[in-house]
Each structure stands twice: as structure tokens, then as C-alpha cells.
Image 1 (cartoon, rainbow, N blue to C red):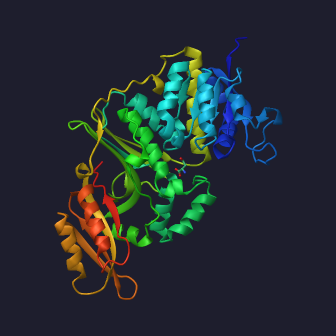
Image 2: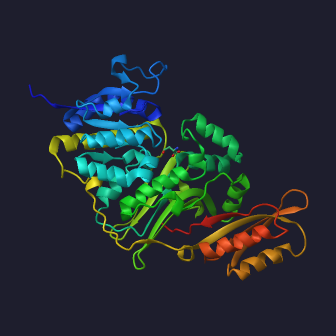
Image 3: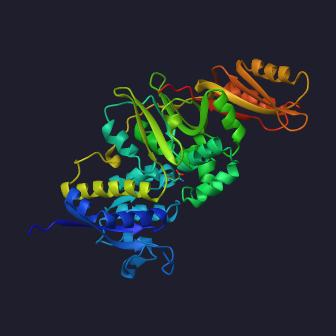
Length: 439
Ligand code: HSE
């Protein structure tokens, strides 16, 4: 009888994702063996607490509390880093790569903060690093960019990359519920990060945008160099106003590159999208990414962006790539660490060249002359008003919602500061971007 290769896997981290990977590797064992022509065996699992009760049953002999023991175990070929955070996760990843192993990771924060160091370690020691599960959960967007779209340059990539925020915005819009109420639901469903501020303040999306920007443009852009705004200041009234104006609101990552000026912009913000656009129609925990390539045109990728099963699907796809690499050797497919970006001179676009239309919500004193003062500030900053909606707010106050014609980040930023300083403006104004993307 022909003996087939056995690839030994060490799972570091056995939370929601780790347990999902274990569960699906067991359930799909026969199919995977036949598809990969190899046995995939989880031989070691690092957990935080050996005594903790888990719904998934694993032989106690496989468990350890020392993730580094797995990274240094010569019998393990593939280390899945599913710990999260950037401290122990970094140590385990670098140790495994130093030992020439293949590391599979779902850790977008780790890649964003330490990607350059990780790929350098992989190159230096002959290890490999796969990270399909780090962006957009179950959607194979990493492989799409790295392999399927390799012929393209990317003037624009935009999309919904955080399932928790999309779930919250969808529920606020359809059920008119307050933000805090829906956030509680999203947490109970297991979508949110342990620290939910990563989701709702836009940082999780920024980490993912950083990974996509690097893949598409070969440049590491850190969240501190992006515009990053979350969804925590939105109210059901904003979703209602957006609908009245023909839009829906999504938390988007937008990565645009002007190849003539050689400028890149990476930003994360709630965005009004035309209600009939493909990405606008994607609700719930789903993610959606629109990738415009100069050769292929625009392609769309839609699927579950958070949750145990979707993320496990992406991790197992990387395990499959690892098996192919072990079986057939380097060169059988494109690995990210062999990628040599040639992006000399690519700079981040200055604020005045980030162009767009805006939605501005102000709570103002309901008195004569207030609208004129607001219009005056916008006019002084060369921001032209497109539409105005006024509704009563609390006693003596009105909610004023303006949309603008095309302006830019510099002008709207200046206008916002001056509006905040007006006596008649009662709360910090809310500014949202309007993404008039037609694809
Ligand atoms: N908290 C993340 C989300 C999980 O909601 O998208 C997947 O990265």
C-alpha cells in the first residue's frame, strides 16, 4: 500500500478560531486527505489554561500551556498562531520561522505592526508565513490579490472588512436600534474582538487595510498615518438620513493609488455608499471587497468576515498551501516572503489631494442666522453645499444635516474646526465621507 505524507500541525491558541480549526480538520479529514494527498495531523495544542472546560474535546496528551514549546518542537511542520495580541504571538511566530517552519496566522494586528520583521525572518531562515485568515474572514482575498490578480496594478481597493461593525450598522438601520444595544448582540454572537474598541473605533479595519495595502502596493502603512474613524458616534438618525439621501452607511477601508503622482492613501471611515452599489447591499456580519485592477477591471468578493467557521475555513486553506509547499517545494505557488516590492518614491497623499463629498451633521441652536453662519464657514473654506435637511432636535435645538459637493480632507478639516468653535453649534459636528463609487 502507498504510504502518504503526514504533516504535523501545532495549534498555538485554542479560543474561538483554534477550536474551529480543530473541529473542521476532524470533520473534513477524509476530503482533505484526498484533496491534499497528505494526512494533516494536529499533534500539539497550546492553551492558556489546561484546566479550562471546553465544548470541543481533545486528548489531554496533546495539550500544553507553553506555545514556544510548539514553535521549537522539531516534529511539528506547521505552527498556527491563533493566540492574538502582539507579544506572545510575535515571539512564537519569530521562533517558528527561525526554525524554518511554516507559520499560519490570523493575526492582522501582528502583521500590521511587525510584518516587515516577520517576512525578513522568514526569508532569512527559510520559513514561510501564510495569513489568509487575517483579512475578511472566510473570503480568500489574500490569495485573490497575490495570485489571481497578479497581472494587475490596483488604483482602488475598498470594502467592508469588519463583520462586527457591519452587523451593528445593519441592525441599527433595519431595526432602528441604538448602537450600544446592537454592540451587545454582536459580542454575544462571538463576532467582536476581546477588546471591542478595536472593532468599533476602526483599528481592526485599519490593521486589515494595512495588510491589503502592503500586498497591493508593497508599502507598509501604519494606522497612525491613516485617517481612522469608527462607528461609535453614529446614531440611527444618521442611517435614516442616509437612506433619505439615497445612500447606506458602511465602515469602509479605502486604499487608493494615483500612479501618475505616485501617491497612496489608506483610510478607514464610515462612508455613505449609493444604496444600489454592490458593497452597500452587503449586510450583517458579511464583508465585501471591491478590487479595481488596471487589467481586469473591478472584481467583488463577498462572504462571512467574522466568526469561528469562516475564519477556520481560511486558516485551513493556508494549511493546505503549507502541505503543498512541503510536498512539492518552493516555487509551486507565490509566497509573500519571496515578494520583492519595487515601490521607490511612493508617498502618502497629502490631505488636499484626498478628494470627496461629505455629510455633516450639526446640532445647532434653533435661531435666526445660525444656518447663515454655518454656510459662511463652509464658504470661507471653499466647501460648497449640495443639500440641507433640518429636523428638530431637543428643545431649542435643531439637527442640521448638510451634504457637500466635491471638496478635500484639508478644507473639510479646517471647516470642521471652525464650525466646532461657533457658539451656535452645540455638539462636536459629525462628518462622514460620501463614497460615490459606481462599482
Ligand atoms: N472582530 C473581527 C470582525 C473578527 O468583526 O470582523 C474578524 O477579524
